[in-house]
Image (cartoon, rainbow, N blue to C red; front, side):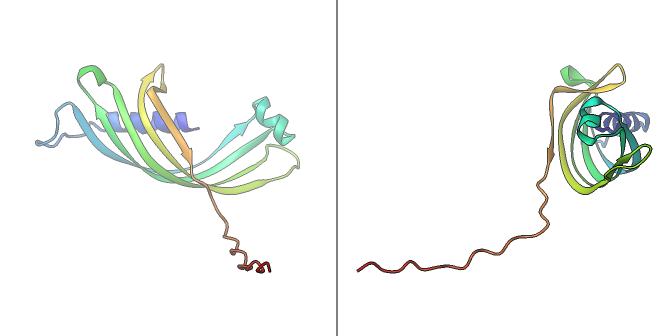
Length: 151
């Protein structure tokens, strides 16, 4: 899913033929990509079906902003540095029939350098996707219980 998103993201940026400001490094293009994605992806890999107990699908509604640094010359030519945050809601459900439906939200931070090879965005040399911890609430601190003094 992320690979397809970044491939589209990098393809759109390249296709737009972005202008370079006069004061910028001529070998670098800066841009911002705003993600607004809603879609369904099948979860038919045995790693998922064994866990879920059915062939499922995931529906995601993702909104995010990515800062892009596109290298057009030199040793980094063709490499795009991506950094951004996404918030999303999701639902995992059976493709057919009945089964448990899982719903939730997540927030994700993505950063790294990517190079497109054979229509896939490949981390070059590395990239990371960090899922922020999500809290529904905070348990109150336990009341302070003074220890009795010993004689």
